[in-house]
Image (cartoon, rainbow, N blue to C red; front, side, top):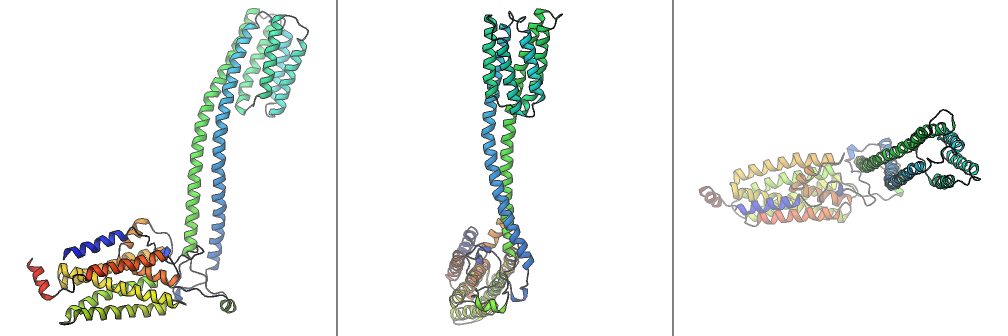
Length: 467
């Protein structure tokens, strides 16, 4: 008869993966997960409920804010790519400027005055770097003055220089000066001042002046290259920031879920006033702890019913059937007493669940007796019932106060006592219809498998011992 026990084990394993969460058995259609309480446990936790409601509202704002933050970092990532492209263009322009400085070698003497004006303009730009728009306007004005001062010159080199300055003006108009460029502008200020001194101040060698100007342009190109490399690193940092913000958003959502779970664990609000209580329709409720205790009583009673049926010399099936019915009636009376405003439909479904649960307990005990003998089988069945009381009782009590880990919830869902408790709680609290009928179906299946081989006779036990 080992096949019956194996089939029962297989059914329990399958049940562990079915949607039989305790919270779903009392979750209201409005999403309120408050667990109904026993009459003696009803209090007035208005402040706690109010605080939980405010925390839930704030958590909603938090999750909305983190969502916007995630969107913002995504846009920042795209903008960083554009910034890197702009810096690359500035780097190319600096290299072109270095080549242009070589071309200015022949016209260095004539450009002394213009170089001094450019150096003065650049110094002003650097001093006013904190106000980018003003700085850009000053640079443009300085370039315009340089163009005006050399407008009358017919020297080809000067004309070429004017073209370079006009290009530089276009770049200045289109440039977007980030804070990092200000440091590079300081280097440009020093280099341009050195160029002006070499070109305009007596005592500086012509060749050295040109060389210094070329070197300054090379330094500028090198600085922009370094800036470009740093910008690449900044892009990587922005990517890490995006990942961090995504984690923050995930944690905010988890926090909101925890707050909703805590809010759901608070006792359901009692009727505020007698007048309001008379005006508003009362909802049916059955405390989950009460449903679990009734299921424990039925499970333990099923072992006793099976043992009592074995003592009967005749009509053992009649004894089993009568015991199952009486056990279901006893459980139904407890549900009727402990429940609040239960509808006839809920009471009828509870009666069906109790019949299936009692038959399942008797069936499991019968299957164990067929495997181990009546004495040892009854003892093993009683031990399993006590084990279920500990596991299912702890899980249901914990689920009424806080979220339970998936492993413990699956372990509890694999036990027949959990199925009956889920059915009773769903019926009494208008909870999950899925959990209700799955619990009844699993109990009926275990009852059918356990009782399919019949009640073990004394000679069956003797044959089992000989084998």
